Image 1 (cartoon, helix red, strand yellow):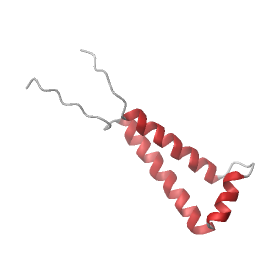
Image 2 (cartoon, rainbow, N blue to C red):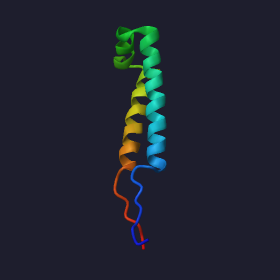
Image 3 (cartoon, rainbow, N blue to C red):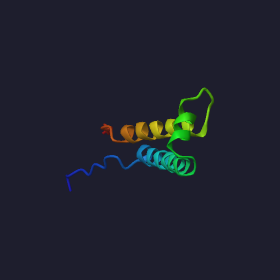
Length: 77
């Protein structure tokens, strides 16, 4: 059993990143279905802090966390 088992991407970072991405996607799809693309675009590009902007930020953070989870981990011996 000298072979080491490396789990890539199955850790806390990818789990949280997936959670953030799924939640942001659900909110954005819900807003698109309720309001339509024109209103969602308007909410994204106005000067107020809106639910759509928070969702886009959550999506970006989720993708960042997933990428962070797939980096190479050096294990101490």
